[in-house]
Length: 107
Picture 1 (cartoon, rainbow, N blue to C red):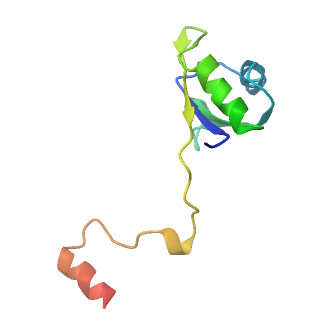
Picture 2: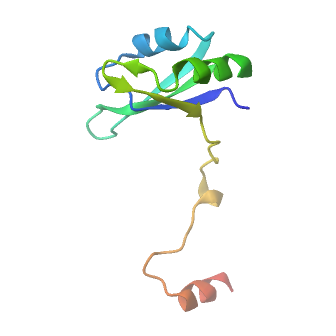
């Protein structure tokens, strides 16, 4: 089990400090990332919280999943493992390519 948690349906006006305080009931919070729109910089209602241990992450899920925060029922679950990004991990297939064109490119 991972120590990284995905949290969604957060109130749009919640602060990082409030989120840290909320999750600290389950243990030590190592890291918080609040999802923001890349253009406007506005918070999008989701985030990632890293707990200090797997036991604390499990406790956070048990305590906080479904909790009502500022009229929002939040969802807390284990974050999916992110695949590293980089030149070797990107698809080069174009949506407009036909299967024959993709096959030719592979040869």
